[in-house]
Length: 137
Image (cartoon, rainbow, N blue to C red; front, side):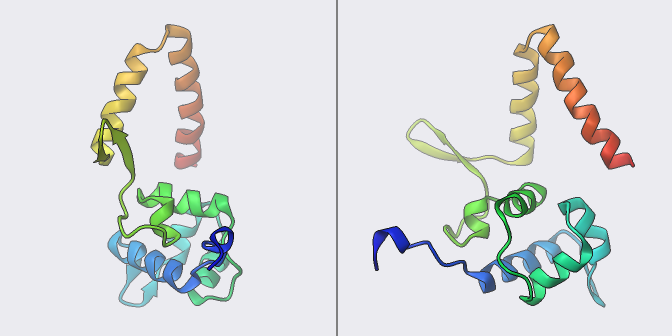
């Protein structure tokens, strides 16, 4: 296969299978099936779009959709796209690869926040309040 085209096709079946797995694991799948109405707004899409992704009736998701799903379920975009078998996000740590858990990420964010200037901390608070307001509304 030509190196340029090695990853040019989208594995829609793999994507759908992983999305279904994530929904079940996170409790967005009931005995009656997927709970589109509960999950779709959290992924910034309509329930119909989510339904179509799971049924294979929608063209491949755009990059913002893939990033949103990966972020919400705390998995790597590479895993969603079928480029790796490891669902966790990984970051280099010296010569090893360290898997970041949500607790690790939160600890790192808290540390970085503590190192920010007072002005930068206020900016961070302002940005986060935007998302807090959206989550409550």
